[in-house]
Length: 145
Length: 271
Image (tube, rainbow over all chains, first blue to last red):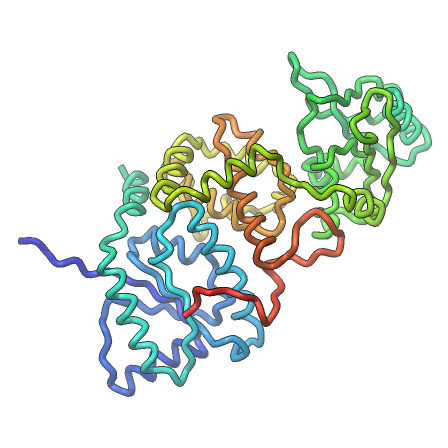
């Protein structure tokens, strides 16, 4: 019997906006797909590109990175720094041939519970359509032998 | 050449510098780095077309640094690297005297002595081209490929990597005492040289050099298996230049692109 592919998503979210937003989604009883594993970090400025690499290394098919909207950062400028880093990182990922469709960057505020549900649903559908990240898993597999 | 030797000898005799870092004849046609600490040693200095290594790498090494003030025989790439090291506060302004051969005339030309960051900036302002044409072509070719082709290209190239870290060690900008690669708590990147470890290592290297790479290409030259690893850091540097409008190695007052920001940085992919 063939099992239907369900993508594994890792979401790195900031404590002050997106995590609170996701919490609001829950308390508002809004249903969304359960493929996402939410990891809370203090700020998007904390989200090093190594964390994203690690997620793929550990078998994620897609990654969501999300935090406060510009101008809303709890630490004033963490998200601006993060934005610059993503701009370069996304470019480099593309240059090295990684599938950038599997990484989603977004701003979700603490009040946008509905938006969080929408985002997760959209990304989950997109990654499900893309299928498992076999290319990268091939690299990981080569490491185990 | 004589002008260079004379200048080096003068500097050492007057005690203005404790050592001259330059090139000397190595095996066959190869030139190797050379450290002259006494006036009579300057006779070993060589400067010609075969000298390619970026000597700025040595300026941050502990063994070299404890010698005292340095005079460095500098190609354009070395000049940029030294300036960037000053911008990153790894060399103090005035701690290094940069010896520059006048345009394309090493044999009988004059040797300029640049003793400060300001003088170095002024000298470098005259040169605008950074990357050589061959690398520009290679980058353009890669950029024109599809994502899958690029993946296949890097997968093929990086599969030859033996993780000797020659690219890291030869890089003048890789001066950290504690490198992420040597960190095993947590183990960010697998140590072994398999596909995953190799791929991640090169992502890390390029990301850590984005906005700091002076495009000398030393990493590519140092690679014992001939992987064009320098294209990765070149690309990252070009990406920073394209998006943030700044380039490493042209000013001693440069802020690191990724530790600063503008509220109006433009991107198109954040939802």
